[in-house]
Length: 139
Image 1 (cartoon, rainbow, N blue to C red):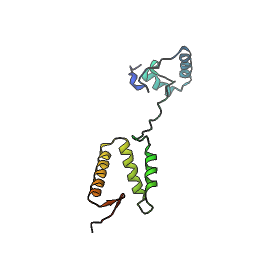
Image 2: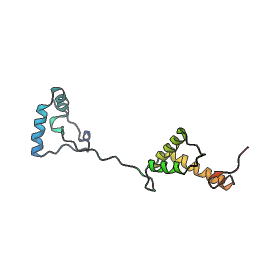
Image 3: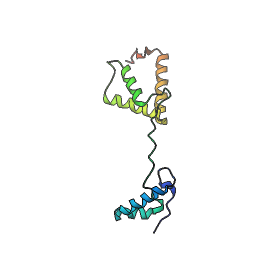
Image 4: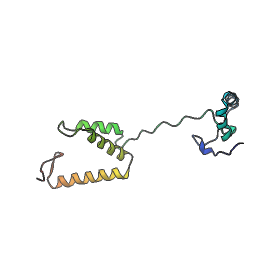
């Protein structure tokens, strides 16, 4: 019994288009396959089975508008931090999550970013920031 399997089950959504030589090799492979595996092939249909699938496309490496990867951004960011500034695992994890969220254009992280920039400018405007450091305290 052969089922009609749509082409979308294939990696690139196209049914196999094999040469005469590949068809011969396909038959030889099928004949050597254990019966248990043949059941799967018979279920999708011998004609739909492609023993020579095309490889997946390589993973896209995402970069921000400055053409930096997340790793590059985090490394540069952490290198600019003063020795006195926080460097705990939680701090680093937060920076990494924000970098990933921004590069992936995740709305939640874009909101974090926009608020942080707005808040920084507000503190700067009100005289609480000088050279990127808080100068006054609320106490």
